[in-house]
Image (cartoon, rainbow, N blue to C red; front, top):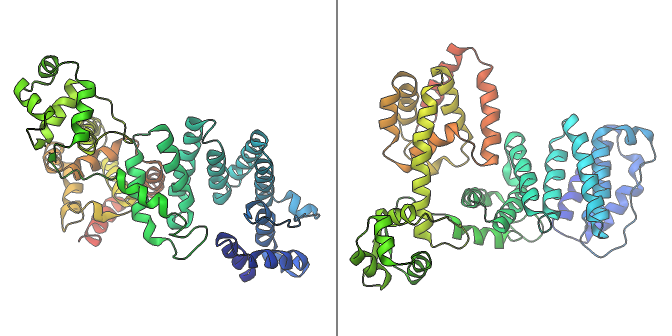
Length: 410
């Protein structure tokens, strides 16, 4: 097992010593203890197809019917065949093999098989069918949230999703960027696949898609003025639609006004009916658009929350909080007594709960996340917690909620 683990590490680090260890393990496979053979067999099957060195490695064949009939091994056999097909340019055949492996992996279920078949399929389809690939990547990310507590170990799935979101200009790109920024500290240092250096470019790019919702005054930059000019047919019509005076609009466009308030930008977003592109739009536009979206989602969520039984509200609130990867990004709810107070008001008085949660974008976004579909990684974590909480008797679940809130106080 140690040699198997060493081979996986050498493969990730792209070390040529991996080839020698692969040949040794392959030659001495008959000496591997029976309990470890399935694990070693899957590593041997996948190594040649994942090997990036230009070496003509002998392929591993499993002649025993036992391995052919073992469903977990079948998944890795199909993944190895899929990678080989794709390496030779037969992408369609490779994707079909991945899907066949996925169907088997789901019946077991086999977490690594499910995640890797979805992720690899998405990656190889990213240019030919980006929207379909994005759906597959979202599914892979959901199962990462459901199965993997150590998300840093499957960082490549976040990398795939981030790349696809950039290709299609997905509006949830910022959330993925934020998650990557939180997770990158868990990556090992050094060279090779799976290290911080390997994902250096992705980590750096993420910084451009993380926005500060606390800001409400922005520099009147050239990029902001040029952006607004593109969507203003005339100052007069823009003034009427946005309810901003012509003089104020002129001062913004000609640069006489050095700063622009967030409220002004929001009026322009609504009045000009601007549609946002997270890849190209200026940061002030994205920031204020996100605030509008959070506010709308908050009040919609509250209306839905009114029709939900108090006990189920606790489950929604607690599962949302427990699914948060980095609780430092929710500093208010992490303070002493705040989560406990939110749980109390959520069940006792929805109007007081509304008032308690409506003063910060942090808490408004949290309420929205309680009800609405969110990032697939967080959604997977949330569904897992919800399943756990729903199995508890009501009284015990309420006691657990209160004790958990006290335990996690900052």
